[in-house]
Image 1 (cartoon, helix red, strand yellow):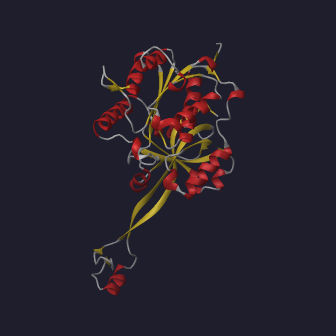
Image 2 (cartoon, helix red, strand yellow):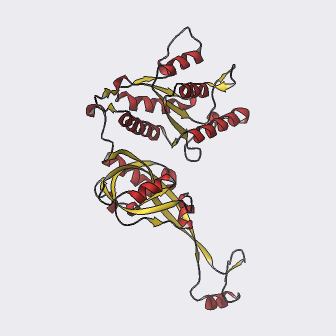
Image 3 (cartoon, helix red, strand yellow):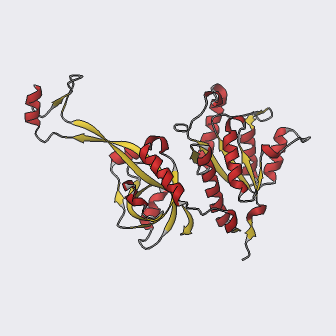
Length: 334
């Protein structure tokens, strides 16, 4: 079957504008090397049509809709009382376009207060985000660079699924070892700041899947009883596991568990994994509680907080945990 050259695929990028200018630019730069037909408000210019109608006309000409949602609901269409972005999205739905949705990470992304809606716009924005989460497998972004990488990655996957040809001279290799190591190094030094960042790896599995304890699930924000882990060997970037010891296992939850469980040991796969960090809460029992209690003047089997005076049967320790969590495979076999 002949493949279609992807340069003629029209893509519409939808978002509010002023608050997301650097994010839109990063997407534009990333897609420019793909030579696809990108459309958005940057290229509308002067037209006789109403602004919203111009947007709708461009969505109607597109095959792929990329929706970027930050912390502003945006300009309102008086006829529908919905934002331009929501009307553009609903137009894409009605045309049955391929849709990719990205929501800003509200906990970790840096957002200027002037770009955060309050009151009724904030309520409408949250309702819109909730509707997007129910209908789509959304992704989140931390920075312009993070967003651009995810959009490019997902478009490459979509091109493969739709049988569009990716010309090798127009794309960088999907797994860049220097870039991956740089992200891992930053995460290793500042894990809370870079938690949620994504990396691409080529791996194979070793050993059987393992259950994940409730303490570790809580630390890594996984669902206890719906998560598993499995040992992995990283093929690319080469020897990266020697630098970062938390890369010995891959965690997954929900449908990702089926992938970890079913993958054979001799199959190399290219994956996207999310970096995760948290503190595991562990209760520690004193090995000789009687002697320890006597020294503090408390009852046997307890310990006393000398600062607050509270008495405990044990003490709590918080252990930092770093891990990688499965997000998706890329293009099947590596």
